[in-house]
Each structure stands twice: as C-alpha cells, then as structure tokens.
Length: 590
Image (cartoon, rainbow, N blue to C red; front, side, top):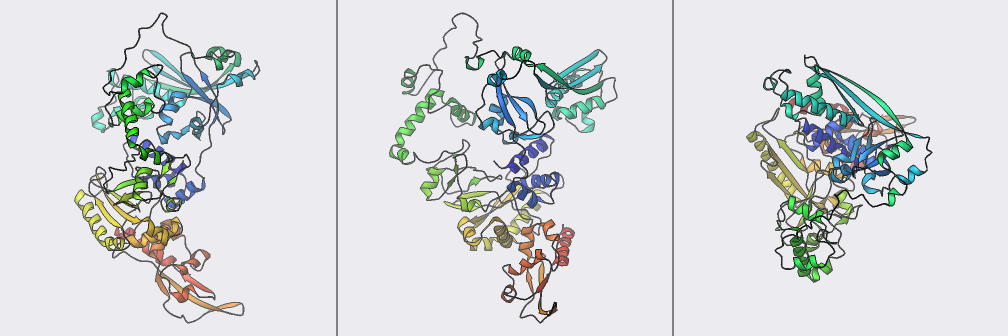
C-alpha cells in the first residue's frame, strides 16, 4: 500500500466533507504544501522513498467486553502508550476504506493501522496473567463541561473525537430545539448547519452571544490491573472459553427455512449442518456485496446454486483457469462481454481498476501479481511508467499519469486531463470544451503516429470534461527506461502549439594552462529543452543555475546537436534566465 495514496484519500475525504471537492492533482499540490515540499514531484518522490510512511500501530491483544463487543488494545510507539480500537471499526471501516488505514491516536499522532488487519491478534488474557497485581493501566480521559441555565452537562470520553461527537450532539439538539438559542438565521449566513463537522458545530454554538459556556480538560485514569480484569470480565481461562450465550432461557422458536426458487438449492440445504451456515466456497459476504451492488436479486442459497452451476458449465475452461490469480472484489473479469471499448485497468492511485486474468488470457495480454497475490493488469516493466504524478504543460493543462486502460484489445498508458467548468473560478462549459478540442486536434497527429488515440469525454465526470491520451505500452517500453524519462517523452508528445519555448545555449572551451578559454563552436549552439523543463517541474527548473553540475547533462537531451553531445573539453551551459522568462510568460498569459 502506497502511503501517499492513503494521505491523499484522507485529504480528499476531509476536503469533500468541508464542501471543497478536489481533483487528484489538486490534492497532490495541497499535500506537497502541507508536507513542506516545493511541488508535487518532490512529494511523489518522497512517497516512493518511504518518507511519508507513518509509524505502525503495535497491536497488543484483544479483549472481549461483557456487552459482547471486542476491543483491540494498541500501542502508540511515539507516545509509548496504549489505547483501544473497536474491532467492529477494524472489520467494517478499516478493511473497506483506504483513507482510514492511517488513523490519529489519543496522543496526537498519526499511525498506520494496517497491522490490525494483517496480524493475528491474540486474546489479551495471556499478557495480563504475567503482570503483577500491583501494576496499573493508564487510560487517557478527555473531559468537557457544558454550563447552561439548567445546570451542567459533564462528558468524559476516551478519545477527543468521541468527546467532540458527544458535545456536538448536545449543540445540535439545542440549535434546532431550544428557542432560547438564536445564533441568527442560518439562511443569512449561507451555512447549512446540518452539514457542519462536530468541531464547527461546537465552535459556532459556544462562540455565539448567549449564556452557555464550555470548559475542556484532560486527565489520566490509573486503574489497578485486578480491577481492570474484573471490569472487563477477563477471568482465568477466558481466552479459551466460548462466547457467552445471551439469548433468553428456553428453547427458541426454530427459524423457518428460506424460500428458494433454484431447483438445486434444496439439495444444497439438505447437505449442510445448518441452513444458517455459509457454503464453504461462496461466503454470504460475497452474496451481500453483489446484492448491494445490484448484481443479483437471488436469495443466498439460490445464488450459491447458480454459482455452482455456472462453474460446472464452464467445464474445461474452469480447469484451465484454476491457477489464475484472484481479482479484487470490485473488478469484473468478463472474458466474453468485453466488446473492445475503453476499459480502465488502473485508477488515479495506480491500483487495479477493472479486468482480470481470464480476459487478459483471451486477448493474449501479459499481467503480473501484486504483493498480496491478486491480479495486476500491468507487467513489472509497464508499471514503471505510471505514477501519481503529472506534468504542467505550457497551456496550464495537467495530464495525470496514474491511469491505464484497455482499448480495442490493447493496453495503453492513459494520461488524463480533467477540467471542471461552471463552479467558482472555472470557465463555462463551452469555453472549456472548445479549449480541450483545440488542444486535442493539435496533439492528435503525434499520438496517432505512434499507434495511440486521443479521446474527449464530454461532461465526464459530472461538471468536467476529460481528455484521454492513449499511448501504447509497447511504444513506451521501447522508448523510455524509467518514469522520469517517460515524462520527458510525454511532454514532447503533448506540447501545445504556439507555446513559449526554453532554449539552452552551449559555450565550448579549451584548457590553456590552468585556465579555460572560449573557442569557436562547431555548429549550432542552442537547442530546445522545453520538454525537459516541463517534465522537471517549475520549482526544480527554476533552481537550475548556469555553468553548474545540475545543468551539464542538458547537453545529452534529444534535440541537442551531435557535436555538443560529443564535446570532450570544458564548457558551460546558460539556461537560468531563459527558464525564468519562460515561466513569466506563462504566468502573464494565464
């Protein structure tokens, strides 16, 4: 799992909750600024180097509460202190939402919670048995006291988020039910109070001029371990005991057998111990997912019977594909239904989007397997050329380079430009569409000459137009070595017409004693380095200085004259003023 992807998901989730939806490249820019990097190129490189990886939370063990709930005791390695996470949160939220993989602790740190999913977490009883009876456990407390005309409300919770939720519930009930509280007409301020976060509600409520006040504090509860064992119901041997049956005494009424329509469903039910058990090959969770996704309306056992029948009908084909890797549950491996249209294979985070090994086998395409054993649509070599990154073209467009796709049975890298319209600081729909069409017409001959395609999707997604540039992976693999090399070639392919250029100038020299002397050139001394500058990114390009090591390699760029590339004596290259003028012209045009 890429740390930067999780950070971006968290940012987008918060921004969206605040009514500020962002495109992926915009979130990258925000992340770069938030983490202290000059630009998105630097923050992407930091993510690849592992510099953005938060520490791993350390699971200690799990405790079954008398209420039937289970908590996982976790250690924050930065605070060297423990706290608890609800197991239901891990199973129902953490496993489904990537943004939740990084979570805040009560001690103000951000931790990677993936070990709560991956590790086998044992009952805590074994650990508690080895601790002396005189020792204590420290539990952080977050306290709030709301004072009002009827008295005081006291809230004590184990986390700041839980405390905010309790206080916010009190504020919301007063906002809408207490006529004595009049903060002003919400319509006048343009705010929808139902959409404010807990912190915003609390701030709005207690900052208003009325006789209510909020006092907050923190404390630590030190509980002797014997008492904690008693409170949590942790008894000797509890780890090996079965879960308590909380049903009322007396024989319960037998549940009726489910209705079925598939002719083979009753045979399946007869062959198992309990109709309420799952079939070993088709868990009910998969059935629920298909129901929620609208893929089936069958009952569970009818669905199982249909799945078994489908597998049986595949016959030899099923045997041929037995060794194929599994696909992620959101993917479809439709080997027969694919009609040659555009099908995304990786998304904006470079993760698998759609398709699977059966379809790829039918099309004669290669694939790889990810670190978790799942199908991945790109080979290791192809994977080098996608990334959560992009280039800032001289016309202001920003092709995002994480996407790839199938089109007419071939694999393509799919740098995508998404331009919104009609919202704050955005142009109208027709103006954006006209600009994208003109740009597409300008680059289409270059793209089609290498076997690619340029596709303009209007009003997709929502209030945006998206321009897709399909570049065959065969071309990329043959013409680029690494991702940065591919960025330069993509910039050259997508350079807009009539854009300003950056020219480097080469001055040859020879040694005379210990000094250098300028000599006459053997040919042209200037050449276009605009693609290299665009691929480098604004900040890194503006940092280049004349006659320094970081500009020497510019003489090996594609369009540099051959005599310059082979020059064996001293030299210097001038670019800094030209780069500054290039970006000044772009800013003036914008």
